[in-house]
Length: 101
Image (cartoon, rainbow, N blue to C red; front, side, top):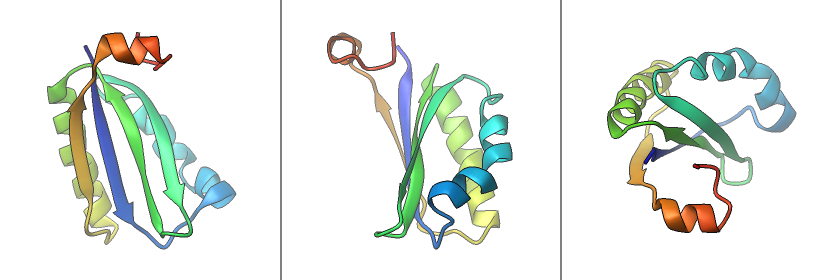
C-alpha cells in the first residue's frame, strides 16, 4: 500500500494564480521523482502557509523525497518545514473514494 507524505511551511507566497505560474517547472519535475504517484498542492494566504499532500509507492520513496525537498526549501531560505509520513488504510480510503487504488 502506498504512503502519504504531508509537508507544510510558512511562506510569504506566492499564492493562487501567481503560485500556479511560478511553480509550473517545479510541478513538472516532481512528477519524475522516484516512486511519486500524485500531489495535492496546499496553500493558505490567510495563514501564510503552503505545502502539499503527496502519495508515494513506498515509505523509502517518501523519506528520500522529504529529505531532498526539505534541503531544497531550506536553500530558498524557508525554515520551520514540517514533514510527516503516514501509512494509508487502503480499505477505508477506497470506501470513501480516496485516490489510492
